[in-house]
Length: 489
Image (cartoon, rainbow, N blue to C red; front, side):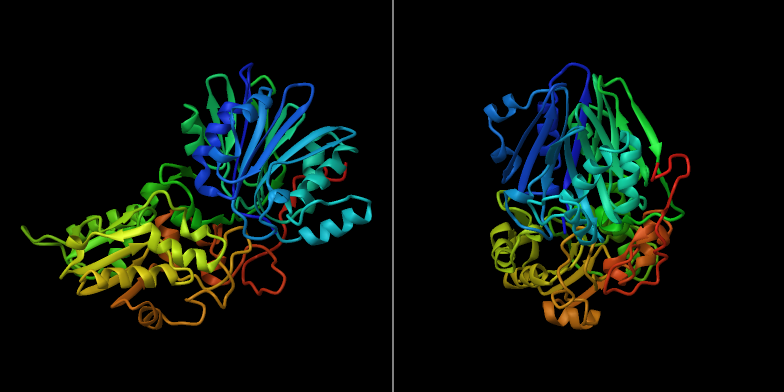
C-alpha cells in the first residue's frame, strides 16, 4: 500500500535544517520522482511543505524560507500502490495532544488494512489510502499513553512488513528500520549534527561521514542539538531480509548499502555473470546507467579468461567494452513510469544506439534485470536495426518470476515475462540470440550474504513476510520484541 522511496532526517546544532534536507533529497531523487516533501520543527511549531513532482519543481525559495528549524525530515516518493496524488505525498504530518509528528516511510506493510480498520474503529479519520498514514496514526495514539521509546516499540510490535522510517516528533528526529532490515537506512555525521538517510550518497552530498547502517529492529534518536544520537535495539531477529534488488538496481552505485559499495557489488556480479554464461562476441555494452557497472566487471573478467573458463593466452583479447547506447538524461527512469504506454514511449526517447559500435558486429548487451520485457525487446530491435549481426543479452540478476510486496513495482505475475516462460522462450520473445541470468546462489555469494538473510521473493516466490495469498518456504515467524522495554508497558 505504499512505495519505494527515499527518506532523510537531520538534527543540527543551530543551522537551519531545510537546506541540508533539500540537498539530500536531490541525492535521493532516483528513489522517487512523483512527489517530494520536507517537515521541520523550530522548537515551537512544525512546518511542512509537500508537492507533486521532482525536488526542483516541488520547492522554490519562498517554500524553503518558511521551513524553519534545525531539525526535520524529508521524503521523495515513487508509488507502487496508493493514489498518485498530493494526498499520499510525504512526509505525513499530524498534530495531536502530545505534540506534532512528521513521518516519512520507505517500504510496504503487509497488515496495513487490518490496523487501519482497527484505528478507524477508535475514531481515527484517514485522508489517504497509503500505509504511511496508518503508521503515523498508530504512533500518535501510542504517544498519548507512553514515552517516545515505548510508543515506537508498541507501533513496531503491531506493524509488519518492510519499513525504513524517519520521524520528527516535535524537534526530535528518529530513524527506525524494520526487524528484518528489508529497506536500507544509515547514519551520518555532519560538521554540526547528524543525519539519517536511505543511502550514504545523501550523507556524502552533505559533506558528512557515514557512521554505520541502522541495524534491523533498531531505533535511532538524534539529539535535538545535533551533538549525538542514542540507539535502542527494540526488536531482535535471527534472520534479516535485505533486499538484493537494492544492490542490483535501485541504489546509487556510489552508495554503501549494508556494508557493500553498490558499484563494486555490481562489478562482482558482472564478473560472475561472465564466469557463468559468458559468450564470445565482438562488443560488450551496457544498458545505461544501471547496467554499466555489471558490464565493466563482465568485460574485465572476459579479458582474463575465455568463455570456456580457460586463461587467455598472451596477446589474446576478449570482447571490446564500448558504450553503444547513448542516454537522453532528460527522460525519467522507464522502470518507474506509471503506465505501460509511457514505459514503451520512454525507451525510444531515452536511448539511442551508436551505429559504428554495433554495425556488422556481434554484441553482448548487459542489463541489471528484465521485468516485463518491453525495454529489452525494443533495445534488441534497435541494435539489430543498426546492423548488429547478433545480440546476446546477459542479466546481472535471476529471472523475476513473482511480484514484490515490499515496495518495488514488479507488476503482476501476468505482466512478468519470466513468470511463465523458460529462458529460451524469453530469448525468442525478446528477439535476442541468447539470454542468460545469474543464479540466486551466485547473487548471495557475490554479496557475501547468506541466502536466508536476503529477500529474494521476486526471484523465488518465497517471501520473508507472511503475505496473504502467497505461499512461502521461508521462516515467517514474527520477530520478538526485546524484553528490555515491554511493548505494552
